[in-house]
Image 1: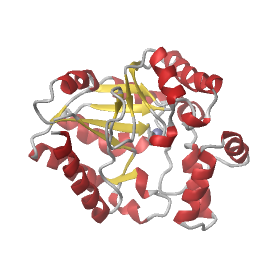
Image 2: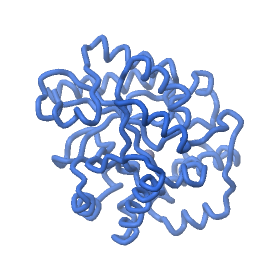
Image 3: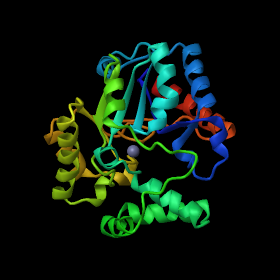
Length: 283
Ligand SMILES: [Zn+2]
């Protein structure tokens, strides 16, 4: 069976699922996270590291799973990391330099928080994010007028270099690039794309963080979020495999990932069922 690659963003305390500031599409409650890992153990999945992924893809005899965390939210360290460390489970983190360098939220977090504060509906906020996604000049103009909004539930935002250094000490942790600003790559010109990629690598090189350049994680990563220019440029840069959010394999080097757990148990159960059907498809 093809390796199962799971994509997480925030792992949050269970009680925070009630807060409108936590966008359920990006949040996994701690209890759900732990039970998902336990069910993977029960289903005889072996947890592989990034270094073992290629071998697992070439030798799909046993059930393997790779855990990936996008963006580098501080709550990964606070909640997921102690458990993963104790269980010696490998994981990959896709990092954006901008959030770390400027101690700021992702642009879509800012849109979300501003929307919650102005009492917009979830649908209105999602529409706003969709509009900004493919219109970077309009997004940048909007961002320039925003504060670095914080809300009381979550005061630490992103990793800092010190927390990355702690994670680096674990043998099984790998870091991959996720662009500098998390802009949607299909919305960028070639020179903007080059800048997003090189600025991120330069930032981490300067800070002594080793980025695994054979791999790359697409911002957002659904069908409309990258194009032929993206794939061509990344392959010219030596990237072998690209993590997407597509639930199926499209190109040989674009890897399918799943977000398994959402903020409510019900939604998660639905997703998980769908995922089990996909396992069968891959067999
Ligand atoms: Zn991301």
